Length: 191
Image 1 (cartoon, rainbow, N blue to C red):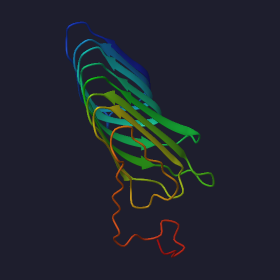
Image 2 (spheres, helix red, strand yellow; image 1 turned 45 degrees about the vertical axis):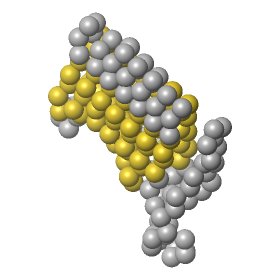
Image 3 (tube, helix red, strand yellow; image 1 turned 180 degrees about the horizontal axis):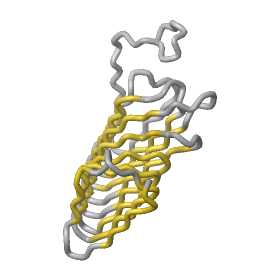
Image 4 (cartoon, one colour; image 1 turned 135 degrees about the vertical axis):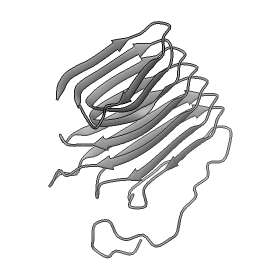
């Protein structure tokens, strides 16, 4: 594991190749005022920020990740592997542009289940969060906030627990997939 990868650019796009499978960083800090595009990055924690540029990439994270920009979209494919216990948190924030996050959640930490928090915030644009996988019995908190745009959160079929929907200008909608879902705990409970 490398200690850190830090890059600060001005008026230049920051493009990072497919290095996520070759090297893991303890921390990644990327700053600039243009687009940041990472084919793949692997890290314990990261802070990636742009002023006015797109943030796009595949990120493998074990502790925390913050993605912030303004007037640019955030498009992230996340592998969240909680290997240390505690809460693995992701924050994505932009203004006047969309957020698209696809995330796979993993952990192999018995006996305590890992915790995951994902927060996405924008204005005047949509947010889409798609959770493809989740560890059994892992507490999950997803907060999606937008003004003047639709917000969608798709959770893995094994999700169990509470959720809350609210809106100021429109009626919230809940779409359930009533297909057959195997009890993720292996206890053959009917869902």
